[in-house]
Length: 182
Image 1: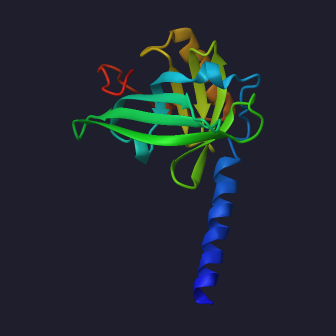
Image 2: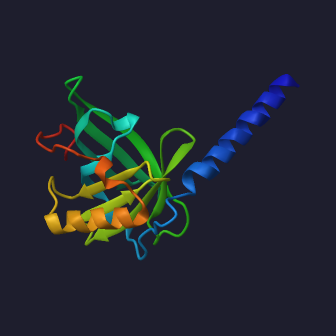
């Protein structure tokens, strides 16, 4: 009986965490519509981000997206840990939270735990502004290791309109060739 109660509580927690962590985004954020996941696939370089523990001390960060057979998106995030002096990589899966033409996804690197991944600005599938589940997560991505100043400024303005404190952005060095880069 005790094990059944523990299992019920654990499953309830996992379900609640899944609902809360993947169905939200910042209040003023809107995911991109008319989104084409096939055009989004491929390599994206991280230009800037809010720092958080999973990317702490990483430069040369990048993400590689490809389609899985079931329609979900395979995610391979990698970067160079400049404190440990080594390349690191982690695999994950992203799934659409609703319609596949709306850029509101959930991504998991740790089993059943998902977090929001919302493309809130997209410039010709070359540059993207990605919001997480709340105002603690933000990324500026590019297909190249740099971004034009006008697009960078437009993304910063958009992030500020959503409510992000863009002074917290970390500008990621992109000065090494990754062994994961294809």
